Image (tube, rainbow, N blue to C red):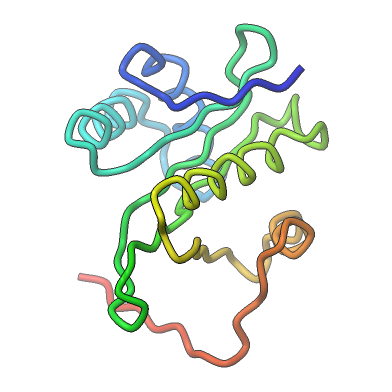
Length: 147
């Protein structure tokens, strides 16, 4: 049975382990202590909303949303920045349940939508997102600047 709840500091230990696995997936060095500190700060300062999925009492995955605003729509917009499910639980509906919870949160906060980005090489994500209602934006260029 899939259960989704908003993560709090109570969930920090389990969440930090999954967040560290997520970062390793994206070729970053493992650093659970820093992962825990990062998540703790986001949660304490209300700078993000994290939803965690569970199978019984085992945390299976998470999604982290960051608040943005759309000037043209004059509304809040959420960035679905992180989505990760432990390899042992993939293909069992946890990602879809997390995305659906993110959509629900978007509606509950009167936001105008959710946006996300993923690597072109992320075959799983690029197959998943259209299935849950996301549309690939072919009309805009995405640029970034790193400091």
